[in-house]
Image (cartoon, rainbow, N blue to C red; front, side, top):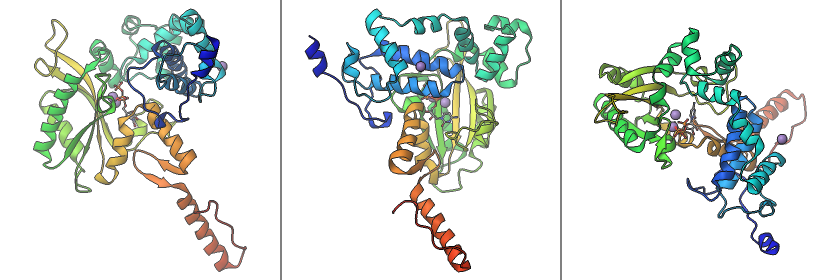
Length: 365
Ligand code: CTP
Ligand code: MN
Ligand code: MN
Ligand code: MN
């Protein structure tokens, strides 16, 4: 039996973006355990550890069969000591004590509930926890000052924490499509995010808006948002030109994956006929992201907004480390070309000034 286990070990490519991964896979109990630890690391702002657990979970999701013994995992990428220990525990006992302890810890649960409020990030949630606020009821009773986003998030908490269905996404696509084509003939609406990946549910609905003529997308967002508002379809909206000011990281820590497209974080009000509201309700709230891109950057924006977050991160890491290229939601460029152009300019300057001998090019073309 041991021999058989040795022979059926797995191999996968190093980067998540090089692997085909299905929504339904063979190792949900292992990937769930690692994902919970990733989530906990994110909630505690330990990004290094969070990415390590996300990568480990992604490797397990990509395997062609169920793992029955850790020996099958020998040589696989992204499985560090910590992840292997978790996997070993789950294989042996069906659960891992670190995962169980985390899952039931007061801090983890409080952070989950509080950051589950639209507009509340980990820093705010952590501050509230230190003030003794662990749940929605305590938050409501505490008379804590909330900003407009957080107030909307708290008001629509139940709705926004219900999964958005494919049917909801289709009906919102129709609404946005109607608004865009009546206001800006020729402009295009593209569904992105999880629904573009074929997921059946999501936490929001993501759209890219563009116009086939460069520059003609200008003014699109304002018009669309005003129209939606005039139709009573918006419970909340915040439009911004510069994304990083809006990010969960805050302006002090601009994340390199953040793009700078004009965007709108909105909460739509869908009535009966457009969605199935909860029993006894006439409508439900749904989170919607709208992003406007010039057509020249549309391809990169589409790639960048399709996700998943780990896939995007890995694609950028692969581009950088394996191809010496730099990928963002705005562009793809060859870093060696940029560096060599820079060196050529330095050489021209040095030679013309007879100050130094030429420097060699950094990376051969
Ligand atoms: N994204 C981004 N910048 C942001 C937010 C999101 O570039 N400020 C990109 C991410 O790459 C992400 C994609 O947009 O993969 C969609 O983000 P999100 O809606 O958060 O995730 P989904 O994959 O759509 O999952 P869900 O179904 O939970 O919405
Ligand atoms: Mn460790
Ligand atoms: Mn989404
Ligand atoms: Mn989104």
